[in-house]
Structure formats: structure tokens, C-alpha cells
Image 1 (cartoon, rainbow, N blue to C red):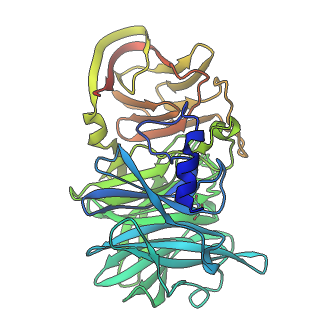
Image 2 (image 1 turned 90 degrees about the horizontal axis):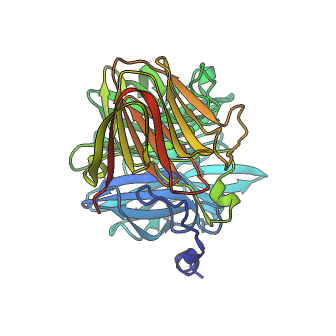
Image 3 (image 1 turned 120 degrees about the horizontal axis):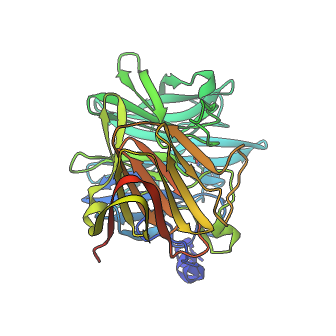
Length: 460
Ligand code: DQQ
């Protein structure tokens, strides 16, 4: 049976209690990283790491969907399956490039050799954006180019000065780096440079690199494993980090000026970006985290994992500014607007905006089952301690994340879609987090002084 037939015959098994409406999730099964996020022939295409056959990670396929508005997604046939000797262990993460009418995917083929993982880089091409042909020249980057293919993955393909380039995550002596390769024809590739190497505390491998220009700077995004915590920052097992700097195209090196964590929440990983026809730089990420239990799997709901609502990026004074794409806000309508002192309690709608100058505390859920978000004047904190469905992991602290932040005026945007939650403060600090309430009829309770609260529901 083909994988697509299996999906269509089994997707009714899915329990949709926690399945989000406006965050992307698969028809059935497990998803992780977004892959090949691209704007092609007037539509947004999203590929993703996919194991349709269970709600756990397994041999990776590339699932595929497209959208006209980044909110409503149409599921398409699985784009890549692990069916070649060089990728029988999985088609791992990668990216896409549009070349005239072609959609080119570059991904990591995984197999096992002498008991070790062999990770090599491969190409697949489509002219209709639906069916993909793996290149007969695969693998195109392998042991001919590097000594170590055990941790060598997640190619970011791009075009510059009439040539193809690919940035690939690698590691040396337990320290992450990103390697750059060049090609004229997608078939024969040469090693160009070690584009950037981590400092020893910055992680042992930098997964899922992305590179783009934004507001006059070059931005390199990586997803490091085991980035050493700095106070409350970089506390997840896997972090997502952006480096701002400049590429020196004479030496093929990235010269970093600054770096910072992209999101401060509990569930955010492996982000990828695209540029669309309106020149917007849009980011999407997996809204989950490695190494923890996932309630939809524990409960036998036959699915696990979703993506964040896509965010538009800007760079101001070297800092990443993130706003939910305008398409989402356009689908909302103002339901109530009020000034409140001390306590606000109301039904939770998909979007609540809070404006205040004072510390506050927010509870989302029910009296004994809630997600908490606090501001004490010096830092912002998200807390899952008071949820009945516990989510625990390998890390020291699986319940709380915080970020030092203070401002004279706070605009707090809260987007909730069943178990998916994003909180964005002054478009500068973002918290992406999942929370699984026993009952999805949630209330929102805000304690604080001098609050202006706007509540929005969906237009349709
Ligand atoms: N997930 C993929 C890898 C990547 C990791 C495997 C990051 O390609 O490095 O599913 O989450």
C-alpha cells in the first residue's frame, strides 16, 4: 500500500480534541522540523519531517502541504519517502530553492554503515510542485567531500552570483559548525569553507542552518544541541539561535556581530524562513521539543506535533522583531475592549491583547488546570506547573521558562489555538509553548492594575 493510501485510510483514527485549527499539523502521525519552506508559483509550500505510521519519531518522510494565506493548508501527497539505499534510514531535514519553474529540494539521506549513521546530501526536483524525482546523481555531497558523515545534515540550498551553494550542519571535536559547498550544476559540488564554527559553549552540533539578508544585515539561524544555559536563556535541550553579521564572500566566512535565542518558550525548534512575493521574510518552526513526553501520544490520539503560526521578521538595532503574519490578524474581529483594574476573567478567545505599564499575572485554563504567564517588572515567565497533563523531559527544569525584560509599556499578544500558544511581548520577546488542558473550554484570568484588554474572536 502506498503511504498516501495508508494516510487516507487511517486518518479517521485521529482524535482531534487537541488538534489545532490554525496551526499546521499533519493529517495523522508524528511531525517535527519544517522543511523546504518556500514560495512557489503564487503559493506557500511547507514540507515537514513526517512519520505517518505512529505518533512517535520514526523513519523520516517529507510530508507536504500548500497554502495561499499561511493559515489554511491543503495536504498534498508525501513528497519524499525513504526508499533508496542511500536514504533508507530516513529523508532528514533540508530546504527548497525555486529555479525558473523548478522546485528543487535538498535533503539529507540517512542509512547505516558499519553500525554508524551515514548522512549524505541529496537532491530531488519537481516541475509541478507535487511530484518529486530524486536525482540519479544522489548522493551529491558525501565522503568525497568530508571525512565524517556521522553528524552531517540539514542542507540549506541557495543561489548567489550564478552558483548554487549549500550550508550543511556538521561537528568537529564535539563542537558544532556549518560547512559551505558550491556547485555549478547541482551534480558536482566542492567544499568551499567552514562558514562558521561554534564557540565551545554554543553547542555540539548546529542543526538546520538558514541564511538570509534582513534589513541590511546577514542573518544565520542555527538550532544547536546542548547550548550551555546562560542564566534563564538557552534552557531547552535544543535551542534556536540567530547570529547577525556579514558574510565575507571573498573568504566564504560568516563574520558574526551578535547572537541571541529566537524564542524564550518551551516549545520551539528548527525554524526555517522564506521570502515571498511581497518581500516578506517569514519564519516557521516546530512547536514542540525533543526529549519530552507529548500528551497526544500518551493519550493515543494518533498524532503529535504542530508548527507555530508563521511570523514576519524585521531587524531593528540588531534585534529580531517578530510579528504574527498579517493574514492571521485579518481573520480576527474585535469582540470586546475594556479597561480593568485588579482582575479580569473571561472566556478565552483565539487572540487576547493586553496593554499595561504594571506587573501582571495571567492564567489560561480552569481553576486547577492552567498555563501561567507572569511579569514582575523585571522578567517575563511562562509556567506549566499547574497543568494536570504533565509534560516532563530530560532537562533539569521542564515546566518554566523566563526572560529578563522590562519596559515602560507592555503590549502582550496571546494567541491560543487549543493546545498551541504563542505569547509575544512588544514584538521583541516571544514564548511558544504547548499546553494540554483536561477540558478545552478555557478561561483567561488576568490579575494586575491599569490593564487594557482587547479580546478578538474569529471572523468566520
Ligand atoms: N531533525 C531531523 C534532522 C535534524 C533534526 C531528523 C532537528 O535532520 O537535524 O528528523 O530536529
